[in-house]
Length: 559
Image 1: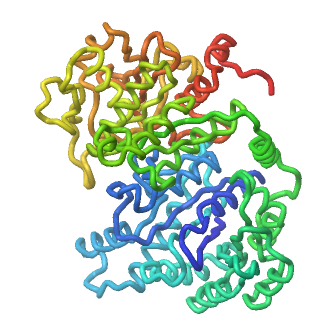
Image 2: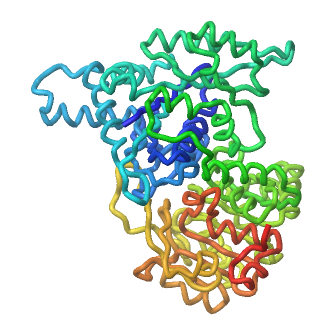
Image 3: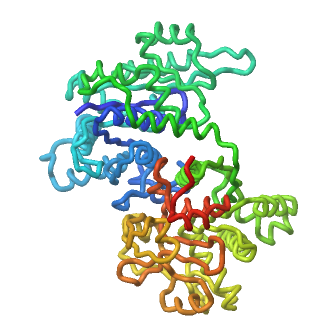
């Protein structure tokens, strides 16, 4: 097993996740089996109870693990399926050590950070690295490990110490460190500054780890003199200083690394069993990146959500939209709308903001209402759904978006004025959505993970005429099945259900260009070369291509 540790310096959010994913991608393109682990130094057990404003969206895995959004990047780039143990947190490590101590596994010894916490980290990594993440069930050959935060953070110290020991345990030829650092370029001088990187690498070496590759994040390509300066002061060859400047598309990052000889270096440094020849997988990435840059036609989607101040809150949703837009050769424009701005209370408090929000909504080609928790902004979401339904605008509702589409239909078409979810109004006379009868979990009380769903009608064609699919869920409330017939009599069809036929999974409105709601989160399984069908349908309808696509037997015109 070969281990590649990706650390970061200077600032967090520098792009370690994309770098780690890209390294894995170029190694996988060489025919290697690659897995990935993300380490988050926070004390939370997992990301399940975070607000999206903390660390961005909560990504859901097949086994129901609620994890950091970087694991979504790994899955999309490498086309693999991870599990909850691929995300290590300080909370998980301490919990496992304390549980062992309570059972007496340490035979009365004093339990300490070194060696007990550091040993637990190493054991977790070594065990998880051997678990297959590919459909063929083959054990991985390379494990890419991303350490969250920045070198020097007090909370990440036990992990740094664990890997200092780990490099000797697995031997030098099986372990290397990629350090991602920032090269600032102040506007006043326009000069690329190396001092933050020098300090970061020095601190890393002081803690016992030496960077094998230094990946420099910068706005413009790294100048030769700057690269040589970093090489001189950071104790590496100039070829070990890699420039990752801002690019038009993240699809270009693996190509950047490949062009600068990262595969060649890793092959020599880790003695990898690969041939240096042109690779088909990277050719696809290059085609995708080139096509993304050449797109001329635009399609705009209004994203009506609660967490629109931070784009990372909807990372997977945006990626799913981008994958679908690329598949139909359109450049995507996302119009972020805070759902609360569409409500009449905003008209009274801030008329300008209210009219700007409605102008954005009305000018979009399609409407997307994603998931969320809590009552704030739900009335605004229903206003957007009502407008899309009445104006025959393409609409996709995901999780809460689907639930609110049911509520809006009950109020507007069935005449149930107080129709609501028991989450927002427990006293409603028409509880069209009710709480799941679930066993309480350690975090919140909701359904997470993969579940099989049956499909009918238009959705079946988008999914490729399959009888059922597996999709990932994250919700607490569901459509009340006892009221199903009231909706279907008025044209709102429940075309997808769980395998028992008890849970309503997909809605579709008759005589509408595209009005679909899904209880699950299809964005979590969308891939650059294989977009998610519900999102793909939304983009096709928004670009006016859905009917011709269906008429051609679900085939796109030749590019």
